[in-house]
Image (cartoon, rainbow, N blue to C red):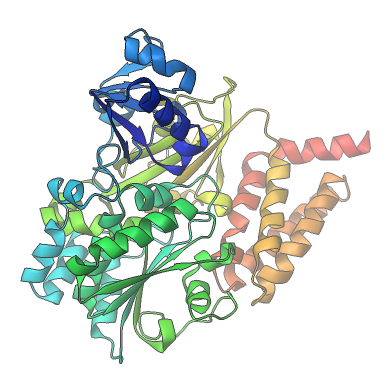
Length: 492
């Protein structure tokens, strides 16, 4: 009997360790393996027994599963479940199937094929493959990865570096954590390929301190993979929890032991980055997509997607949603399909009123915009952003005026203080929103918020101040009744 149980942090938080211990106690001869997560978070702890899935499982359910009487928990073959069968899994192809720290499992599922291909061709040919694939940064900006790599390749420097931004700070996002905990060798392989392409000899993975399981998995995986990727080497660094260090230049300052604050550009990190040397900075999902591109060919990756958004995007469904989890699919799927069909609507059963795409700096979309395709350009045209691919769902009980207030509050708390528009604008914005909520001069104060947002958007040094206007103004634009309700409540 073979029993697979996820060792993912979310599964552990839901009781997976206790479930595994109970299986061991009741069936000591069974082969129990802790594997990566399928990403079906609403079913965790998810147990796979001889190919059949059960979830969510508690220790009290184990005896019934072993006896074959747990029909209410049985979901059949996990790979055939609509949530999994409807996906196009390129980056997360091993999710739920392999042991995270098994080199044998990784190689048996195509691991290192991309690196070996890269080792047989020239650095420029590797860069050309990444460019042709259409791969863009999956951390938020959507900048073409091949152009960034070519810039570092051409730059002169005593040393060059590959920096992986694993400071996954957006609310409702967890794809980076899932990949580092479930398939760490994939990220390591992507970084090694980037090193070959650009001439970098060392890489750093900057992981947020709130991810202790990911840190431990990555440190162990780096030790195991060291002989395979040599002479390229990787070092793990742990951040101190500052949201702004998800911005690339703040991250570089933190790596150098300095205060985590934004650097003015130019120079770009590709010219003068870590320790003043040419540096590639990509996030986890970008680098983890590279092995597929080199292993299967640029065209195989570029065949997915729409317009200038090529390949797949691991989308994270969170908030008030029935089927929360990770859903990897080609660009082009609509927001409506993601939240109503894949996500199954709200967990509360109430109507969906809004979704926020792109973390705390993303715009709020009302149902009228749910036909927007998941595509960089389409979201930009709708005054939104894809960001890291997180979707947070809200039902009709949400107060959008309070959500606008939270955006300013969050920015004020997390601002590094380097630039005036972000440092002062967020604080003044919070004060002005509070006056609106108190019913004071609603029209004038709304106009003042719009002016503040305009200054923040175009005057801030980084996306923290520059993107905060997205949630604020989208809440005002699409949900004006909530701000009028606050005025009437104050007047009463």
